[in-house]
Image 1 (cartoon, chains in turn blue, purple):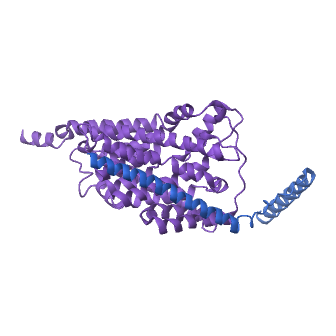
Image 2 (tube, one colour):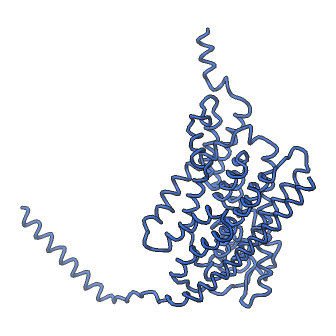
Image 3 (cartoon, chains in turn red, purple):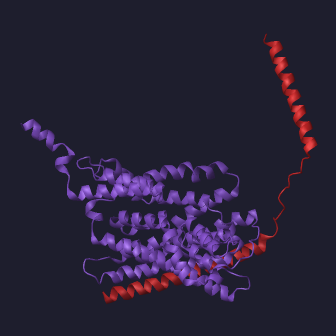
Length: 79
Length: 376
């Protein structure tokens, strides 16, 4: 029992130290990673050009006209 | 008359034992918790149903030739199911908040103290009559403190398959109970002023950094901790598929269809381990108690570590985010956000807590590797 407890204590300490050492290594790796490539590819998000309302409505009207024309042609051909 | 007796003997009623009936009730309780209380329903529902199936007398689900026997042998005995799930979790994980604030890795490390303290606790419990945990058992029980289902199942299947049912049920139940277990501990260890600290906004993380990160993690793991490579490797594969941006189909499958299919079978197979002989014992009560202790210690050590870091940091750190170091993604981070909002209505900590949260996933996978290497 005593022996088991001291073994568990050793595992606890080595385990905790290993977790910390490993994650600190990862921290270092991340810092290196950032230094080499981190800032290069930071490009601004492509902003969508604001579409004015008038333009929008005009586009809509064109679309409706195109659809109406298509429907007419279809009906004429299939009568 | 003989015919009648034969018929009677072929019904379940004649063959029921008390143990089986009790285990069916346990299965029904898990179904209740899943459906009514919404406790981790994705897992507890198949586990509960699996427990019912496994305890049907004479149906032989868990004997060679039975369905659950094969599912268990194929998926859990080999460790394949938890690893596939881990790949899906990797594909769902965004390391952005962690990369933006790498220091939070230390919080994910500190919270793993819950695991190792519980290992000690399990061995100490052997001092009481009725408990006899081996070092392997203790390691498998301790991983409940990692608050990560697949890791717990993977490690338990390797170290202590007999306790797997109880360990998986404890792990998933406590993960569901995170919103109840954590807040009192967090409030106890922090003052209101500390809880209302606002943190600086996180920086944008570039795509290349996100792609190289899983590769860096894998590289370090294979160098220093090869025992953790099954878990970490699958996790990194999933994450790379997500971040690479060229295999969107694979990434989608890993985080949706594949993980769902495997979850069904994983749940059933874990449920099949809930048999009376293995579950109805004092040890199970011990495991449930130790699991709660593991969660609490993990939460506390995360918060204390965050307080320590805040002392030395130039930028403000809210100690609450340390509690998210116990993985349980994303529940623990949400709890941090909620407790933070209670103290300061305009303080949103969710993204800050996601850093330690995903660090906790890495931390518990690393801890599992260490336990495998030390006691496996």
